[in-house]
Image (cartoon, rainbow, N blue to C red):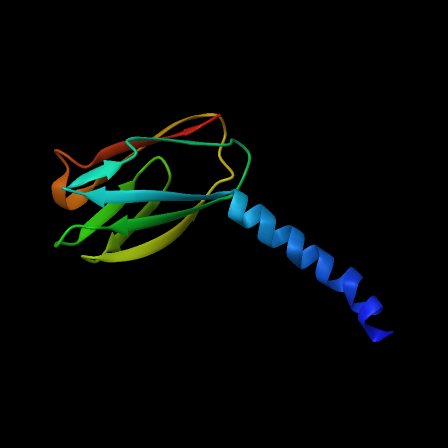
Length: 108
């Protein structure tokens, strides 16, 4: 009988988990380049961005447009949250390999 009373309390948690998985994106650093170069995300939503560095050296994800910077150690991952974003283009780069590590978040 008590289990029926818990269901309304657990439902919002399940909805939040589904929404967070829906707005989760992966950005890979490999060979001192970001993949994908153009990361398309929905405008108006908070985004969880996981950055996976597959290189043997650290890299710093940096974006003046997104007001974020995060060092990602070699062979490690880091998570940042961005948004909600207005529609537009938000460039980012790898500070340690700026010539090759370039990309853009496109909110639409």
